[in-house]
Amino acid sequence: MKDFIISEAKNEKAVLVGIITQQQTEDQVREYLDELAFLADTAGIVPDKKFTQKLEHANPVTFVGTGKLNEIKKYLEENEIGIAIFDDELSPKQLRNIEKELQVRILDRTSLILDIFAMRAQTAYAKTQVELAQYQYLLPRLTRMWTHLDRQRGGGVMMRGVGETQLESDRRIILDKIAFLKDQLKTIDRQMASQRKNRGKMVRVALVGYTNVGKSTLMNLLSKSDVFAENKLFATLDTTVRKVIIDNLPFLLSDTVGFIRKLPTHLVESFKSTLDEVREADLLVHVVDISHPNFEEQIEVVNNTLRDIDKEEKPTILVFNKVDAFTYVPKDEDDLTPIKRENISLEELKQTWMHKMADDCIFISAKEKLNIDELKEKVYNKVKEIHIARYPYNDFLFQKYDEAEE
Image (cartoon, one colour):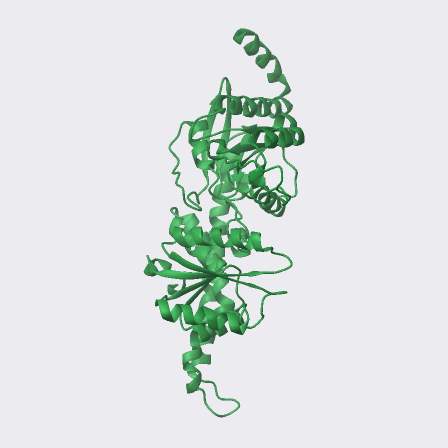
C-alpha cells in the first residue's frame, strides 16, 4: 500500500489544481481549493500555490489544458516542488498522463482523503474499512504502476511482457484482499449489530455534520466525556457512543465521522456500518459551522449524504455552532454588488433559519459554552417525545417528575 503512504512526504510542498466550470463557479473553486489546502495540511503537506483554469469540463486526458499543464510543470521545476494535488478524482488515464508530463507525485482529492482516513483510524475496524476503500481505489489504477516494464514486452502477438504478467498477478492479489476485507467487515458488522441490539430500547441521538464543525466538542459537553477534538479535518473517525442523562431521561448519543464534499464513494460504502449509527438514530443533531462563509452549501452536502445513507426522514435539530467566530461586514449604501453571506448579520440569519426550522433550530458556541443549557432542553424535549411515543405508559411518570420540579 505504499501508494497511499503520504506520511513519507511530511512537510513537503505541493501545488493545488482546480477547474472552473459551469457546475463550479470561480468563488466555489476558490473555496474548494482552500478546503483542499486544509486537507493537505491535515496530511502533513505544505500547500504552496493554487492553479485554476476555466474549462467547459475537465480534459479527459490531462484534466487541465496542455498550456496550463506546462505552466504547472514550469513552476514545479523552478521551485523544486514534488507533489501536485488535483481537486477532483482523476481517472486512471488522467493520472497516468499527468504523472508522465509533470514527473512528480500526483494526488487527487480522493487519494488525499483516503490517506487522512488511514492516518486517523484508531481501531482495527476503522483500519479495515479504510484499507478496503484504498484497495478499491487502487484496483483500476494498477496499470500506471507497471509502465516502466513496457519495454520488456515480447514482439509476438501471444507473448506477454513482464509488466502485463505482474499486473495480472497484482490484480488477483488485490481482488483476493478485497474479498478478505469484506468478509472481515461482515463479521464485525454482525458483532456491532448485536452490540446495538444489546443497548436495549433507549432513544438514540446521532451528531452529524460537515467535518470540523465542532461535533466532538459538543459531544464532550453533552456527555461529560473526553472525546478527542482537534481543529483538523476528520479528527473523529471511529464512532463514539455515550450514555447521556439529561434530568431524569437517559439516551444514547453518538459522534459520527464528518462529511465533506466529493466524499469518495469507496469510503461511504466501506464505512457502511459506522454510518449505521445514523441509520438507526431516532433523532439527528445536525451541527453547522455558522462562521464558515458557505455554511448553507455544507448543510446541503450533509443532507444529500444523509439521503444517500438513509431514505427515511428523521426528526432533526439544526445546531448553528461557532457563533463566537461569526463575522459581519455591513454593506455600504452605494455598493450595488450582490449581497454576500458576510453582509448578513447574525440576527438576520437567526430570524431566517428560526422561521424555517421553528423550534428545531438553535445558535450556540460549544467553545464558549453559550446556549448549551438551551440546547440540552431542546434535546431533552425531543427525546422525551420519542420516548413517550415508544413507551406511552411512561407519560404519567414524566408528568409526576415535571410537577415535582415545579
